[in-house]
Structure formats: C-alpha cells, structure tokens
Length: 78
Image 1 (cartoon, rainbow, N blue to C red):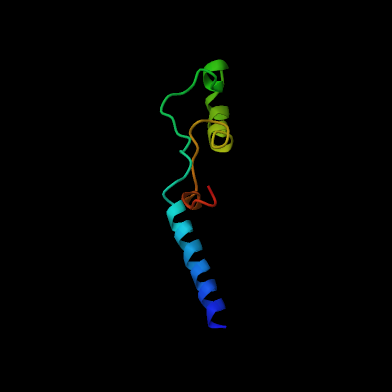
Image 2: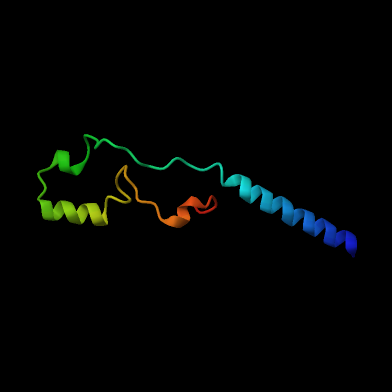
C-alpha cells in the first residue's frame, strides 16, 4: 500500500512541476502600436459615436489590440 501512495505522490509532484514550468512558456500577446491599413477607421468614414461602440464592443476580439483578462496569464487557459 505504501508503494502505491509513493507512486501517486510522485505523479502529483511531477504534474505540479510541469504546471509551474508551463507558466514560463505561453503564446505572445496580440498587441501592436500601429493601426493597420485595413482598420475600419482608415477604410470607412465612421462617426465618433459608432467608433466608440466598435472600440468597446468589437475591437477586443477583432483587432490587434486585445485586452486580456487576469486569468489569461495562467498557461492552461491562455
């Protein structure tokens, strides 16, 4: 019985070590400083009201400037 517990503990320790090591390797965040030429503000004449709606509702997923939540820093989630 003690050897099964020792194997179980070893597996748990290995899994925790892999989880901790994985925190150092993650995808690059999608943030750019320049606005691309395909941005709707450059392509179309958009009013400021519509542009504010687009920036608050759409740009997070449909642009190169994503605002990441706090839990995106954890590797299995990101």
